[in-house]
Structures are given as C-alpha cells and as structure tokens.
Length: 174
Image 1 (cartoon, rainbow, N blue to C red):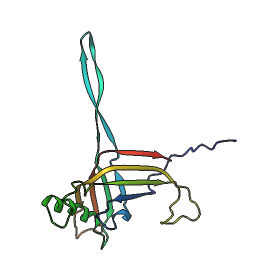
Image 2 (image 1 turned 180 degrees about the vertical axis):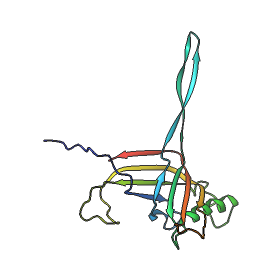
Image 3 (image 1 turned 180 degrees about the horizontal axis):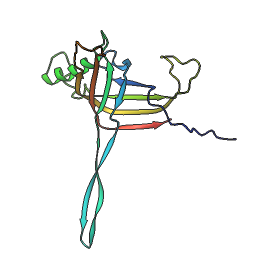
Image 4 (image 1 turned 45 degrees about the horizontal axis):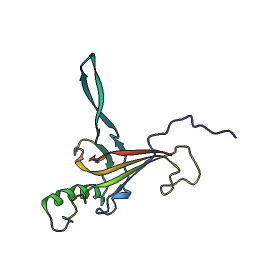
C-alpha cells in the first residue's frame, strides 16, 4: 500500500483562535485577522573551563516565550477583549464583583487551530475542514490593548490589537 506524502506546506490564512476565558462571555468565538509572535528563545550560558582556553562551553539556560499579538477589526457590541483587559484592572484594584480569592482568574489557555487549505465540499464557518496544526498557549493574560488612530482623512478600518503574555505553548502536528 502506497502512503501519500504531503508536498505542499500549510497555508497561514485559514485559522481559528479560541480564548478559553470563562469569566468573559463570548470571547471564545471572536474572529481574528492575524496572530503573530509564536516563538521561544532559549538562553545560552557561556561557561569557561580551566584547561579549555580556546572557547567557552555553551549550556542551555531558561526558555522565554515572546508575547502573542492578536489583531481584529473592531465590531459594534463586541467588547470582549476590552472586558478581559478591564478584568485585570478591576481585579488588581480589589473590586468586590470579581473573584479576589483566585489570583489567576484572569489567566486562561488559548488554542489556535490551522485548517487544511484544499477546497473541499461541505466547508462552512461551522465546519472549516480538517485541523492540520494546533497551537496550545498556556496561562495567557493581556499585556497591552491598543486601537489604531482615528483619522478623518482616511477610510481605513478601525483595528484592535491585543498583546498577550503567556508561559509557553505546545504544537500538535496533526
């Protein structure tokens, strides 16, 4: 039996982001135009050893994960990203409405599914096709919230950008 081998890389435009934050209603189903920043940097520690004077040994130090950046067009009645940012602010102020006993209530996991590109039958927003790659981002929380400039001389879209800090990610190649 011959095994089919994929010869084309995955495309980067067919994906879905699911933010699993139970304290913010509707945040799991938001659509995003772009996701960037999935990367990890491993620290290098130079170690000099007596008798080995030509170059240092190189050891692995801590790993650091870059923040994610999520971008989307601003839609009326979809304030979930602002609500998540505000949740942290009110949590730190000690607002009585929030769960002050849970110091990680603002953190959550994020899942990013990348779908196969080939045009197939029965593909819809509810069924975008088979997932071929899955990123799982752990203990994520908003680091920055930004909106692009208002400009009466242009006709550009109003874009919302959120920078998200996290404690690592995994990749499932499906």
